[in-house]
Length: 419
Image (cartoon, rainbow, N blue to C red):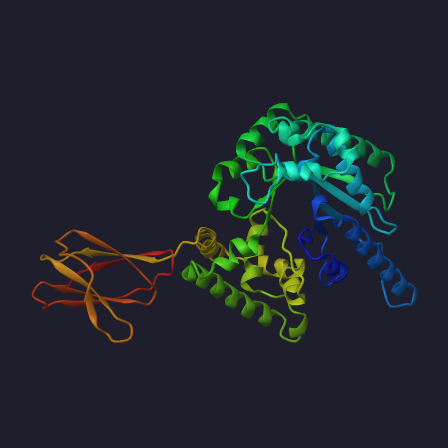
């Protein structure tokens, strides 16, 4: 789950709710620039302390809680070798807490550089607002935009190797966060290629907007070729909230959701209250996980936390048949791109004379001509919707053939106009 942009006062409640066994969240995403790592560490410690107290009272389990993975990031104001080390140490210190679970940290570079062309980036202002000890640690990264992040990567490599060696020596130590992997966020393909050329440790994680999945195939191919795991954020905004741009694609998602709700309910009819949820959002997240893409949903509301939970996602994945996956592979890219899906129908004229195709209005039954003359052996293609009706006439209107579209959105169907 993501807490990077969550209001600070909500974090303890959201963390507590999501660490419950019913939710079983094992990874939390944040960033050093969100200024909430200490709040997160304290929230985890408070939850574990409350769980231990419940156990001593006879109401809980004596099992040690599972490890927690935290993804956090170095902000672009801290790019450069020494500045990055300062940021990483601060993150580790703030995430440290006296609890009974091991915390593994996945440390990413948040951005490759500050860019004044981006409206919300203010390179000079942010530099001026830094503490003096950070300024003294290294030169301003916005003055060396091509190389500062490379020095940062060298710092991450060193700290990752140090922690790997310490983990081997201190196996079983609880409470001290260890760097488990290093990675990148929001880097473009050219920077990724440059990194691979000089890196001693390749990134294990790349974090990017859900937009990249279907809009940047070159980057996605590069990540797969170099075995770099892709985690996506902004899933709901990028896909679910674009349903008005592509209602037909969202209709497919809703149909799959309805089918899976019925399937899940029929498999456990006696415990409706505890059943996993299969909303459109859950279907979307399950499809991405099934496609080996990491997800970082953010939710403050209890209902949304339930639909984002591993238990709901696992339940959906179990019922993602090849037919349903094929439907989702048509719908989800269209939602991402805000494109409307249609049903493509073709009419093959197998008669000896020319024909005209008419579309029948679904409410008035008025027949409207939608084609030019189609000569024998020719084909006419129309974009339409499932259930729509077309009528073919010869030029003398002595022959009438009616066709009902049975294909779904994003599918094709062919009709032969013959006697």
